[in-house]
Length: 317
Length: 180
Image (cartoon, each protein chain N blue to C red):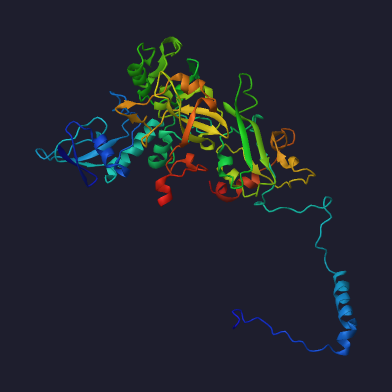
């Protein structure tokens, strides 16, 4: 076990833990935001630069500060390391710059986008972004394309986090979905728009931090804040059958995986609870699901408007 | 108990005098006031022949604006409905089909857009929330109806007619928008 200090909070973690995971053990405001890192997908991280932190002292042996800000999702902790996240002005300033960079090619079409209300980039822009952009050139544009029967790809909105490519790599046997071209020409695509027809390909929609990959079966049906998320389960031979169904009255508009406070799929017994395409796209009937109760939604989220949940903690307050 | 306002009067029960019992002086006094009003300036307007000029901040019936090319501005983002404290606004979004680019400005549009004028409190928050400058409250009065259902206004009444455009420049000048 080694000792690290993050934002003046000391914690003992195992060797090999990343700064991000050590911060998540503390929880709360200390946790740096992440757009590309996804704990259930090994190999992700290090691309979006939103989780940059300042390292004021490298370790007990070598207490010099690191010259540049480090990506907390792929830098491992060392004994005696002192990390500054929200206490560092440099970090806050840099995060604003990163948001500006991410928004260079991202269209501001939130009123149209289905992800609005649960979008990581929207949250990040709200907390760290600047009011205006200094970018004057034209944004790159693509036509939205259908990849497979159920997924819509809006390449305009993609921030190239590669999470979906990792889903394709790690959950599916044959890879038909990847990145084409290089640098700022990079584009997520299936090879010659070949359909992604794997049973678990729908999980790409959930890992996408922005609205680049959206559910075609729920496209433009409603806004997330008008729907009521409910924990539900069904008997499924392919997946765990544990999901969140998004209800509008007695109609079911959308089925997603259960996500934790970091927007990542919940992990039970070391296994991420991905759901299969049949549960996600085809089971839209209330009779096919057992409703367990309302999903817990953070008070800071717009989805919590008009959303009532009675839990033990709420009753005690 | 002592009065808090110090304005209370003790009720007296003394018998009325002869003049008071006649009531005539009081009646003539009242009629004199009525007579005086004949020569005063009228406060009523002969609506609809005469119409009052509204203040620029007046908030009346809504309009869903179109842009210069006649395309609907509204993209059914739902922000007006979520901002509405009276829950008067409902909508169903639709996807724009190929060939409809001259009808709707964005990829998504409102297939159904309804405002219940009986619920609406004319607070103007929908206008404030709108990111597309699509909804505005105008200086028009919501017409009266015989049936409750008729107060639910759909797109047929709300969307502005290109041949008879509705001027909202005064609304745009008021409040925050004027500062920009």
